[in-house]
Image (cartoon, rainbow, N blue to C red; front, side, top):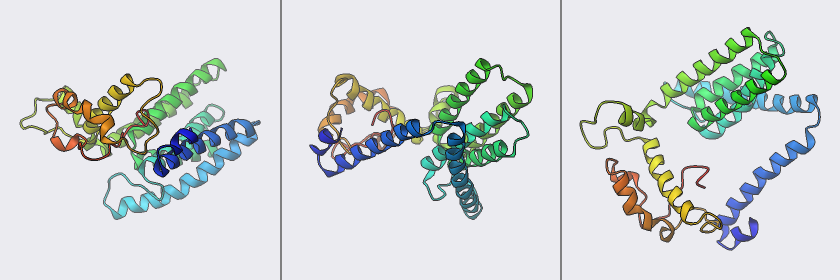
Length: 257
């Protein structure tokens, strides 16, 4: 990764280093967490960070009269950081529904997921809960009270997150709502991401094995051939939502990147 990244300049090399850093942290966690106590110690660090981030995020929420908040991490990292203590807190409820540690982690993580309002983290939360329920079933730990608490937590976080991000989900109104009365009425950030995902997927399909190289952002020569098809496919979207043919293309989706 670093070798191919360095071939494309310093920006690509830094991106390659970030990928390796995250991989190293993941492998480190798998290598060094051997006991339940080790895991709880790591979770408690995340809970502590989430509590501090929540305090600052709530202060921002009050100062800004609502809306999603970055705290001191940025919206996406804030929500992503909060997801781990939230999942661990929900898991702890199946050991002891009255555990202060479990409820602290659940509340701290839930506040972070709501204020960060990252839809990708919301999807990640649901995937985590699916894994949790599978483990609970395998270990025969099913109980009504923690199951109700899990469902209620998901309902609160989902409804609050979608309320904060309603303006970003215009494509759902376009698909399931009334026909737009004017062009671009339902345009939103996730409408643009659908366009970017379409272009990124077309690039991937044409270069599935080796890709186009490790770029910080894709240069025009890599994506411009797909712009005419994208404009035809999403003809109802504003022109500003399409990448400009004279500047680099920012993928906007982790799996495209």
